[in-house]
Length: 288
Ligand SMILES: [Zn+2]
Ligand SMILES: [Zn+2]
Image (cartoon, rainbow, N blue to C red):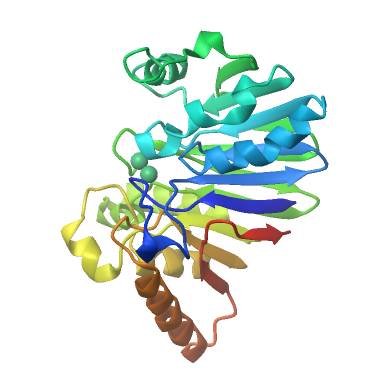
């Protein structure tokens, strides 16, 4: 499987000189194999992915794309109207998301393309569009299997996804305040911790929300994002092989990310941990 980061920034797009190394586009990750494409979230990064996919559509090849939304906060859906394959007749796009919404997923996505916000409506697209609220335990996309689980600790909730194939597993778990698990009563704490650790256990790659440092988190409790020390601790417990810290704070500069990375590598080395840790960078591709 080929994993590419098209957007790694949380909350709002942050173009500019200070963010050009790790990127300013909001969340979008693609997982592809043999012409099958899974997209995780439709932040502003999906625009560049769409341009990359467009060439294929031009050659007249039918393109089946499966987009899984963690939730519908702006930073995770805002790139969708600019996703070029929507305007290609050979595209078949299925969008999956949580059914646990007060409003149906489709009405939220339609709302975003209301004439007051965007000149083209969802019904005017050339592509064939299907919007599915997920219900079955697993979803098959070509040779890949997608699993999912609701995440409680984010305003309005969110969904984490696992993609597996040939014994390899990628987990995408963003927009969740894992620190909150430890503020729950004993029973709920055990339940939440157990299901998270089980979901990420032995993952070959975990792409996860690590928006705040431990110190920053003290002032951002309840904002729905995880602190880096808690994320790393849980990834170590679950024997994750590679951890991509993701959903970078909009205020975080490239220099600050470099520094965080250096500090944490030193800490892990001192303790003899073998996990591969990095901060996700826009444009980065990994083969698994
Ligand atoms: Zn977000
Ligand atoms: Zn969110």
